[in-house]
Length: 493
Ligand SMILES: [Zn+2]
Image (cartoon, rainbow, N blue to C red; front, top):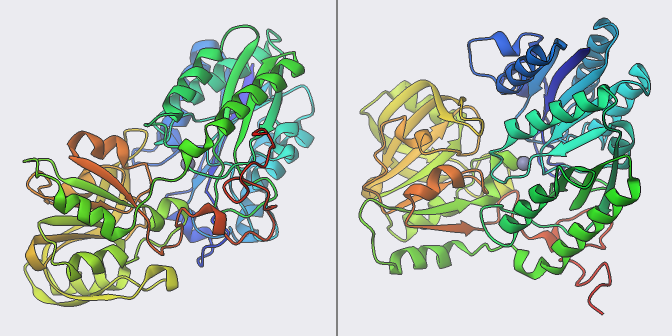
């Protein structure tokens, strides 16, 4: 047995002002067959190492190919996308006779003139290897599940958790199922169900928590191999944008379709409980100030509309403005992506005190810049935070600023959402004595911050990815989805 493996990951916000170019991938490192062996942190390493380990134990020869990822932003430039696609196809051609192709893909990558990068890639791989080779992929749940993806792959598995803490578990399952299929022990068939919904599904809360538990419970019995939920990525405008269930069954397409429908309709009937639970900035700040202080446990506010993980710039100032206007201090806020401000702070040096213009630079969704007096408390080259796979991920040259009334601000040069408290503490900020922490993230912060938070508040601002799904200006996606339409499947009657 012989397998080829590769990773190509970026999530495309087709409304974002910044394109994704080669530099966006170079920032995270582009690896050609050696991501698993490189000592420095890289996003593909843990997945490639896992598949190498599984292959070795199973007596499968593994060929490692391209590993590339970029922080979400606008469409990937066409030559960059075409180049990566050609590299993966060439790698497969050069790998010789293959039994399996295993991929880690996002599922919501769009390029200029290409709305379905993953479908196009999987179809090209199928055309190259023929029908006898098993093709499998792990996807991010914020994917657009297209017919071409379903038709071209044998097994697609989405990560089940949001925050995505289960990537390696799903990669492990993908290896198992692909190996069994390559040996002829199972005959995977996939069917999906369009829930006609667009919203977010944090799996840390009900009703999604129980839903995920029941998806897992359905697997591994009665011919059901895998059950996945495509949450969908609301800010990518494709014909397939939205929520879809899909099921991989052993040889029985009707069984796969019927289980996908039954899970999909259950989610649909619970949709009112899935309306986004965001509040305005002032409502959240009122609640924080009204609540009794818990010593050592700050309140946490998520700035969901300026999450770089969804393609937002990471420099919006709406919440910072209100903190300053309301005179709120003893707080931390981050991480701002503002390279000019970082340059000024680095030139001034640690301990310097001056007036700084901060944020609000990338476009209207970033708000207006803020002018405030700051002291540079620390500067760190190569700052990191722990990422979703438990390994350090880069934040680049970073700065800790202290503003009025003990307001601590983190600036980073590698545009990234906040995953873990070490984004702050790694610069020296002591979070335990603070009243409030504001993180630019939608949900991936949750695993790291919930244990220390007195309360968590999801806040909407006029930022780039405000979770108001009825008003996203789709031009390609049809508008027949909940919450834009009350009952698009007509099941309420
Ligand atoms: Zn995701």
